Image 1 (cartoon, rainbow, N blue to C red):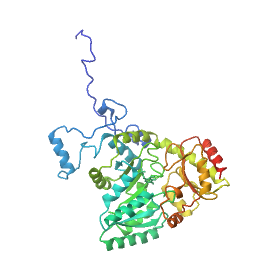
Image 2: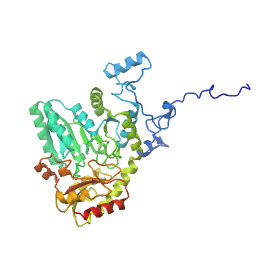
Image 3: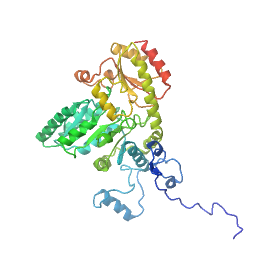
Image 4: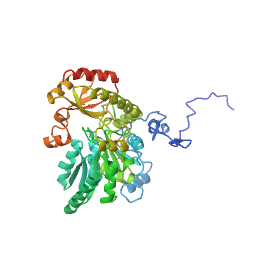
Length: 439
Ligand SMILES: Cc1ncc(COP(=O)(O)O)c(C=O)c1O
C-alpha cells in the first residue's frame, strides 16, 4: 500500500477494445431502425466519441511496410481476398464504410457502395457492366439523365438499348428480351444489363420485377444482372432484392438524405455484383465525400420516421385532392385505377409513398396559377425532403422529352408533380385548397 494519492494523470485509462457487433438479442434479429444508431461503428476506436467523427484525410498510415505490400497484393489480385482496411480516400474511408454497412441493411443486401450523386452511381454501375456491342434493356420512363446516359453517352461506345413500357407483361418481356438478344448477337455483344425504374417518374407506373426475373431466367440465363432505381419508394416502401432484382440503385439526395441539403447516391446487392463497380469506382473516383457521408448517417437515424410521416401526410392530402372539383385525376399509388398495376403494387410495395402527380382542370396556365399561389409547398424539382415540393414536369424536368414520348408517357400540360413532406397535414391541405381557388 502507498499513501501517495492517486493522480489521474499518472494512471491513464487502459485503451478500450472494440466491442463485438450486436445484430440480434436473444435470437431476435434487430430491426434496421435500431441498427441505424450504431451499426458498423465502435466508439472505442475513436476516443469514445459517441458519434462517428468526420475523417478528413486523403490517405491512411500503414502499420508496417509488410502491411502496405499485403494491401497492394490484394488490390492487384496477386493475393486472394481483395483489399483490406483503409488506404486512400478515393477508394474508401471510415464514414463511407459505416454508411455503406447501414445502407446494405435496409435492402437486405450483402454489400453497398456510395457515390457523389445518384447519377454517378447509375453511370458507374452501367459502365462497369457494358462492353462494345452490348445491349441494355430498360423500362420506360427512366429519370431523364439515366435515359440520356444510355441513349446519348453509352451509344458513343457501341452500346445500344431496347426499352419497354413499365407495365409490360411476362409475354411482352419475353418478346423484348428475344429482340435484345438478337440485336446483341448482330452487334457481336451480349445483353449486359436489365435496368429498371419503378415507379417511373412522374407517372408512378410500376414494373413487375418478378416477371422481369422470370423472363431473364427463361431467355438469358443468370449472368445478366437486373438493376433497379428504387429512389421513389426505397428503402421503406419497396425491397426489390426480395422480388428478383440483383442490384438496387438510389439517389440518396431524395428520401434517404431527406432534408434537401445534400447530393449523393448508392447501389447495393450481392458482393459479386458490387465488385466490378467498386473496381471502376476505385479507378474513376466518385465516392461520396466524408462530410456528406456523415450527414447521411444522421439522416438514416430518422429515415423510417420521416418516410412514415410523409406517407401518412400524402394519403390525407390525396383524399382531399381526389374529391376536389378542379382535380381531374391522380397518379398516386394509394389510388391505382388499373387492375394489373394494382396487382404489381400488392406484390411489390409496402406503402404508396409520398410523391405523386395530380391532374388539374385546364393546362399549363392553370397549373402555373396553382404553383405560383402555393404558400407552404415550395416550387422546386426533387422529392423526398422534409418539406413539400411541387413542380410542372412538362415545362421543367421533362421539357426536353419529345412531345410524342411525353404523350405516350401521360406527361400532359395539366400534370403537377407533388412530393409531400412532414409538415402538419391539415396545413398542407389548407395550402392546396387556397391555391386551387386560383385555378
Ligand atoms: C428516380 C431518380 N433517379 C436518379 C436521380 C439522380 O439522382 P441525383 O440527382 O442524386 O444524381 C434522380 C434525381 O432526381 C431521380 O429522381
